[in-house]
Amino acid sequence: MSQSAAGPTPGVRLVVVHPDKEVLAQATAARLLTRVLDVQSVRSPVHVVLTGGSVGIATLAAVAASPLVPAVDWSSVHLWWGDERFLPDGDPDRNETQAREALLDGLVAEHGLPEANVHPMAGPTSVATSEEGATDYATLLRGHAGEQDEDPEGVTVPAFDVLLLGMGPDGHVASLFPGHEGLAAQGTTTGVHGSPKPPPERVSLTFDAIRSAREVWIVAAGAEKAEQVAAALADGPVTEVPAAGAVGQARTLWLLDVEAAGAHA
Ligand SMILES: O=C(O)[C@H](O)[C@@H](O)[C@H](O)[C@H](O)COP(=O)(O)O
Image 1 (cartoon, protein in one colour):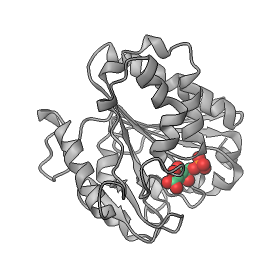
Image 2 (cartoon, helix red, strand yellow):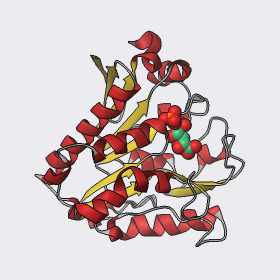
Image 3 (tube, helix red, strand yellow):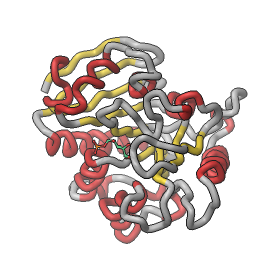
């Protein structure tokens, strides 16, 4: 493992490189559980934003298998999503469905996570359009924000303790794709149309919502990510490398395997 620190605004940036995808998922799970435990020792509730993608879901599966799961007070953990594919409830391609299977169902059944603390983005089962899903989610987020989180710019969300993001080979994070109109979305959430990656309809947090997080953790594995990882770490333009715009208030962690780290390792 190698580490290097740089200082982009607004928080510190840390790059951590692991030997392979499996170790990356295991280490990210351990890091996440430790972070939740640390945060719980000083404040409550804890807000974590989940991601889809193979590394994101493998991380949740690794959390589920950890002996540290009972150490967390899950009753005061709230789980959110950075984006969702606009698909019916229970669809296997929904990030929510995959996260529930990998981790959340077990936490609710056996470890005291209240179902009410699981906050999926609405899909066509309950709303007509992705805009409606986005608006509903912004309202839900606002409802869980504290007084100190009130933002005059209209991005009022809970202070996310950790916001996890996968990154696509094109550099997309959440459902914010290069060259796509969603990049310029204002407010907390946006409905996404014509996504270059199926399905075309999605709901996503905006950059402003992502950037409000205390910590943003970007997880990426595989040689096909190396070019965009390098571009993001070189602070490339957000319109071409959306991941470059995903920074946390206190810290931004780039959690990579050797292949994704490429020349940076
Ligand atoms: O909404 C989606 O289509 C995916 O969730 C996507 O955003 C994913 O997180 C990244 O592409 C990274 O995926 P991998 O970890 O599988 O490479």
